[in-house]
Image (cartoon, rainbow, N blue to C red; front, side, top):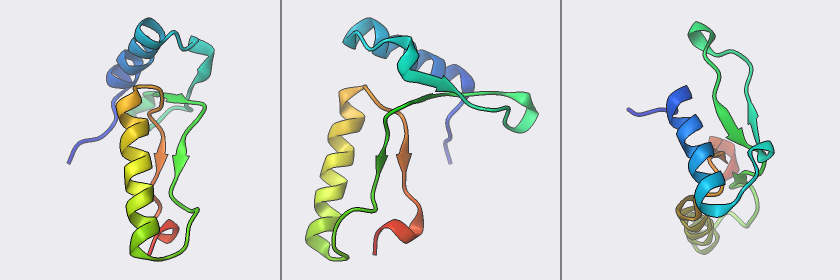
Length: 85
């Protein structure tokens, strides 16, 4: 299973600034993770809480997340199990 790495999150931040003109201040460095490593997270993210617990809203949430990921502007998506049905 893949996961976010400090190097990958820094590359994402740099690409967002270079390609989209997103200021570096729109990213925050996290507190130290395992091994003392930190990652850069976008200050704007996406959560899947909003919407009724039905297939239509689940699909709409999926589509919205896909568009946000493809935009290259955010790298924070909260997918807590209690957010969707």
